[in-house]
Length: 130
Image (cartoon, rainbow, N blue to C red; front, top):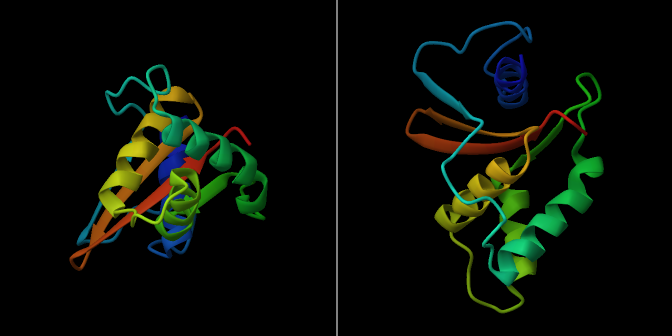
């Protein structure tokens, strides 16, 4: 149930579907990842641990009005990652995705939705246990 719920949340968030039960239209490659094969937060570096703490604090601010599920897009995750690094080095989308994959493996109710539509790659971190 939870992966299917995360898929519906992602489709509705990105506007690919009119109804929550609808499927992705032709040309949208959507993957919902519940396990990413990382070590989670067990062997996390200090910036990754700070990132996880910041994301945990932010969940209540990013809950949808209808579904009551938390959802954070790539721009907000990049801002939180920049805060977690505590220096001025730029944060790449690849680094944010890697950190988000660690969060997915650490938290059972978190999912990472990755969509490719018209050559644009989109990420959405979803928490169905908020």
